[in-house]
Length: 414
Image (cartoon, rainbow, N blue to C red; front, side, top):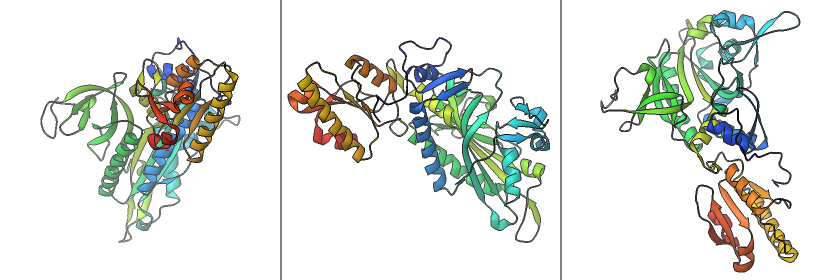
């Protein structure tokens, strides 16, 4: 991608109406734009990060046999009345059509997926089933805050699994829990598996918490067991496994997994015929990852005084190729030719590159924007290439440049 063609806008000053670090930096760097409290537009750079996170999630969930679908976000009132949540759920956005029909905007999808699955599942042979989607959600938060961490409109991955009994739910939940740790690791985060209050059929649900000073949650973390307990369920500050003292830590929740038991199957009369021809309720689990929230958490963890430091797998581009503008036309022509050659070589090797080919921007401005955007590798095409036949290459997380030969670029980046 040529930066001269990229649709974005950076800012020198932080937005005055934002308190959170993630929103301040993402707006300044041209990744998102604020519409209203808890509502953001995602510009091309921001959408590329979201797409990379989504692709990591898809790859890992598909490996464990999950199938992707897309569910309606406009929910008829009667579905929510059937579960008793039309009046009970205080974050429900409710709307009325011109014909007088009432709907909710989806805050979650149990009320839609259970009636759908009822048409698919008949016998034990149809189980287990694991279905997920990556879709927008809407919640009427009383106080939307913390940038991408608590929104009224956001993107979420929700997975639902359906089983013959509670033991099968628990077994699959453990598989999902391990998969979640892989997903967060690939996104650059060391998430902590955290026990939280559970539902009817399980004493615990599982939260995945990322330590950061900007966190809204407090957990008690055992380094010895690499497990934690949410403050809301802690009776003792000692580890429940090894009995050693835990550490109180501020965190951001980026995912959770629940055993739903038969709660929603009862509401929608979701049954299956077992091997002995008896009619039984389907057991279910649900598993969520806040995709936009995860993006915000990554920025809260990976930043410095100059901007974002994206982990490699989620970065909008892998390489930021910067052409230094020179007054000497002969030198400039040669540098431009070399930069174009390197740009093509990287693209041929399927390496995503943002090429800062802008002619009307100073080198200082280019480097400042590069730091702000946080692309993992920066290649500077300038005087050193003409003098010493070497390019300046720097990782965003490092302070110093390395001088390397052109032919070694691919080796270094890979």
